[in-house]
Image 1 (tube, rainbow, N blue to C red):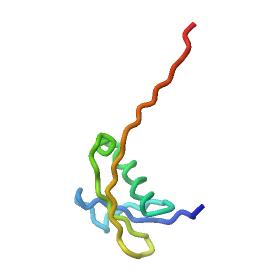
Image 2: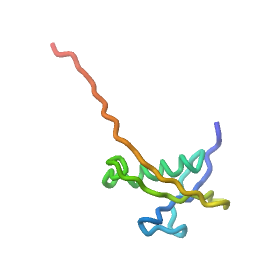
Image 3: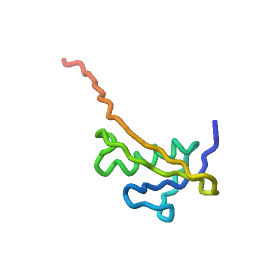
Length: 84
């Protein structure tokens, strides 16, 4: 298992820049983008509702900037309970 790395994640389409990026601990840049999306999507669930978002990710320690389009889907879950 890889050790967590600190990544900087921001969303230029919403006016975000690297200067106001959020730090995310994750094992990969892709996972950092997904974790960030899960956090920011809790406001209205636009990503789970079918929209996509583009996030820029870079290691806090430096290195190349990577871009990811993140999508999500809500998966219905059903349960049954026996009645007396």
